[in-house]
Image (cartoon, rainbow, N blue to C red; front, side, top):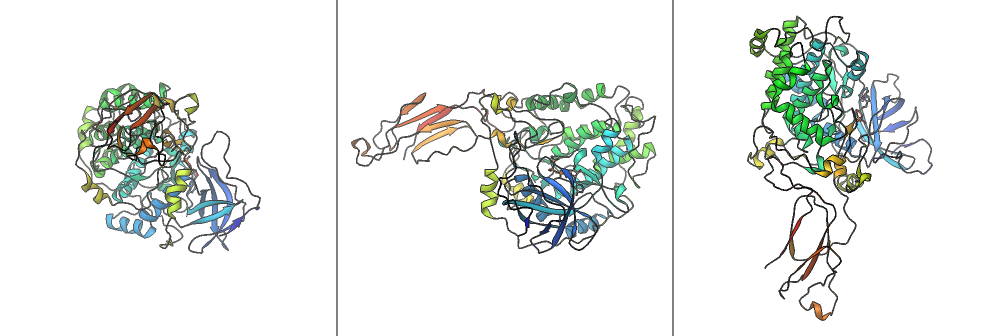
Length: 576
Ligand SMILES: Nc1ncnc2c1ncn2[C@@H]1O[C@H](COP(=O)(O)OP(=O)(O)OP(=O)(O)O)[C@@H](O)[C@H]1O
């Protein structure tokens, strides 16, 4: 393992206020050796993401910095997740085969060139090597006063749908599409194809029952987080919804929850999105006073109708945008044009709007033959050399990642985590279950659309804040495991998921007359206690103390009538 920079012992940099470790700096010229013994020279830093640093890089001995190296402390989860996503799903040969099968020339899916570990200042870091891409789209959005040319927005939508289709085919969702995570290609034809990067939030989507997961609630970038992601559930329709919110913004329209300054309260954003998606037509109307673009209306309405476990019709979605391009007489090929025309993008753009041209709608529903590929082929300069032998250490996959979780307690103002903090990674799953396997797991018990009955009022949810434009991973909602000893005792606790309770049980004293039946006697310091006088029962007295108070609520589709944060606990005697 190469050793980089000076060997002064230091903890992984953890900037004040950040709950995840930031990487040590890599010096330009440092050579890293990947797991397949390939050597990479570090070039200048080209960006710092929320979680790590990104450097230009080249093969040692070469001069062309056509790769990038993303480096993060080993304990950080997102790069672990991203690396495994690439290892399992995005090998260059898989991507090429997919393109061949589909008859498409380009696909905005990045791949990994190499990966490995490096000690920097005695801190173990993980790095992945990827092809270097060009500018990210957010720069153009900013330059244009927070908008893109309408046709370009539609072309990007088509390209992102292509990438989604590939990712979803592998059983995963991306969950964090935004302009900053869309990069243009480099080199010949690079300007015609955009790539979806940053798979730090990628996870398996569900195909069975819809079960809200408090540990993952609100993951993503708050403006665009889907309603399902607000509930901690990974679905394919969620990816499409995220794209829909981005599209609205790319057309120069402020999203209602941005306009209303709700971003610091995820539960309010969630509520606003639920309302928005319940009546898409009514919600879009005031956003586009001169007429809602048909492609946007049709796409978002389609997404709103999708069931949580339904496979999207990607062709149908692409056709909404292809039809719009056709009507705008813009070819879906050549370099993406980021220059605003003087007449376009007046929040209503130049495409036929529903209000202006009622007939436009009928036209857009007529599906064109989907051909989203641009004309040029962009190939990586390097073939990916996978290290098949790589196996993540068990220690890392389960424990180290768990260690990186720093979960502020929720009962107090201190619990408000800065959204900029990458608090905890999504739990890595080293062994992926195939999507088909998952499909067999459980029947669909969930209503097709989101109910307005989503649990929005949990105090835990409103404690969190989020910051505009930044990816947030909200495992900080999960209280850290208490370091207390665990005793085995035979009472059954019906505790709603993730409730904060402390259970005190005094350990049995050897030879104690009180414990002839092996029954531990108990402390009686807590708020409530349950006596089990039956002599056959080893445990006589268990104390259960509330840690935090909360409200009850119901989670749609979960079948549960209690908030995951509800601290109420039922203690029952366990009968043999
Ligand atoms: N392959 C690449 N080629 C060129 N630039 C890249 C590449 N990957 C990332 N970047 C640049 O670095 C920035 C951060 O990358 P990335 O989003 O992957 O990092 P992150 O730490 O996960 O950040 P985030 O806070 O957005 O999650 C991107 O917006 C982009 O500008």
